[in-house]
Amino acid sequence: MARRQQRRRPRFPVNGWLVLDKPLNLTSNDALGQLKRIFHPEKVGHAGTLDPLATGCLPIAFGEATKTVPYIMDGRKVYRFEVTWGTQTTSDDAEGEPVKTSDVRPTQDEILAILPEFRGRIEQVPPIFSAIKVDGNRAYDLARDGEDVKLEARVIEVHRLDLVECIDENRTVFEAECGKGTYVRSLARDLGERLGTCGYVTDLRRLLVGPFGEEQMVTLDELRAAKEA
Image 1 (tube, rainbow, N blue to C red):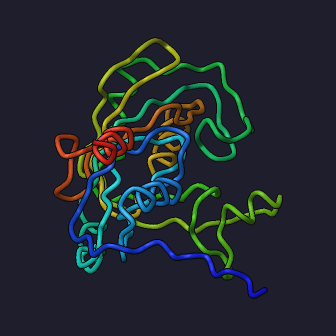
Image 2: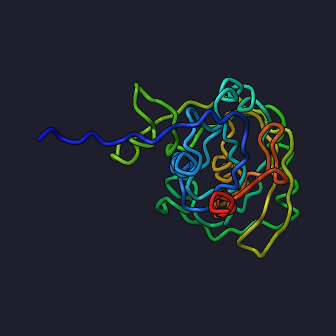
């Protein structure tokens, strides 16, 4: 008997932008997969990857809107992030393994004094756990295989970098408004080095991408509830 062919789900001509509030511990591609199961669109893509440990603004383009993704990705982004002092990790966030420690803890005045050095057009070396390609391979794949990954510094633009709160001597919250290609994890690492200690990102939330901000965000739970309704 001939094998019965699996019926393919119909796809719908959905067009426009949706601004997802990406939850913790979910990759951007996994979030996209869940949206596909909710909407079954003919075409969909996201504008700007967020790490699994990051939350917040993940613009999703459907249908004709996918043609405008490059313009959105070129827009400014705003991040709020927490830096924990005294440790450096392989990934420059809580996902990596510790590689260096320090007993030095910067004061609020010391932090404020060096922030101007990290504003404007500056050079930044991306984290080795990043999607940048090295000889055709993703840097994070090479790093996970134990290879010695060397990435070149690149010029980025930080329009604003503010100290939001010193939670305690170990943790400080910042807000950064930056251009394309900026790695917040590298900012944390470099701030720590400049302050004579170490630092890594322990909380990261993206508040804005181009024209899309918190007021437009919706959660996966809200979308699932709307589908059921």
